[in-house]
Image (cartoon, rainbow, N blue to C red; front, side, top):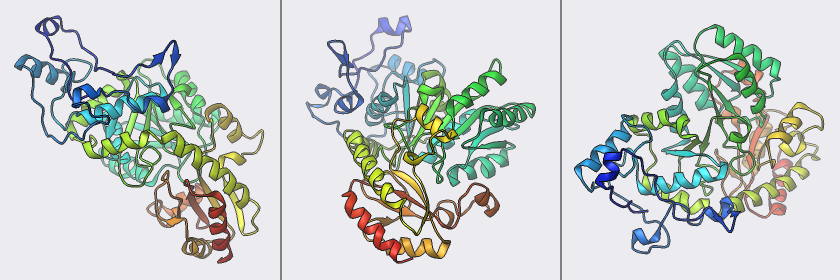
Length: 439
């Protein structure tokens, strides 16, 4: 997609936006093509890049306009003077070929109208929040959240006079209603921020109940429902289908999938993402071309990698749950039939994922001995890579969370978070067996 055809004077005078070309058909003979097929070429025309089968890495800071009139029109889109965003390449803080091709493909998985990419998952979250909030607002969110997200909302945005109220991830409609009503009574509520499954407990949020509560309580300008779908998406959960307005991803995880890049993404409607695009243009949180190119590579195998990891996790968790030194396995495939969590899972999810919470009998000492004894699984934070990773949330990713809040959210010293990779499942079981023996 090196560049689009020149804009004609007639198009300029007519003021009609021209969509970016998408060079792979979305259907053949009436059959809609699957995301796994579209990942191989959607959004890129080899003819515009010297016949290159794969997109080149476009390492440039700026782009040459066909005419002064075209440059003006592009800047009208970038600055928000004209709705719709830039219709051509302008400057690398705003857009670029690698990022645009990646955004075209990201939206495919959830059937989203638009997508944006960011320099990290946290820069995606921060840009979304900054685009929506103003002093005096109250953010409603589920709990727990990733510790950096909690810090951003509670401490950084708190300095700007923004308040927050939360409800537990598995809250009922009545509990959600009560928190939202309290927030509404306190003034403007710009958004409801969710994380499901929650990090690190794996608890699910009822997205449909949240959106129903929002629609029942608010009239006119309603809070935007934003959800971090990193743990299950886009293969095993697609929140836009259940009422969410914006879905956020740490693309570092399953989308990147090889633990060799850091990136973030957001998908949703053009209207929902428009203010976020303007904020990204202003503060410069767009993804760099090289990791965007790496993500294009990774998306080609996303379904294969996630499917294999999910199969491995089911087998490993099935073995772990019967071990005498294991207190509980927080795996979505083991939800109690008839429970609220099982009901949410059946309505929202198509798979149990490959990341789970493992509660060992004991405390920090036992958890540390288990982690230190691992040989195949790597002791590292993050998830969704080809390799199996294990970490200690209370002492690592959630160390900054106050102890009383960790206690309330079941983030105990005996909790180990595990992300299963694509290794041989029996080898992983052997590794966990010898690690448990070290406790």
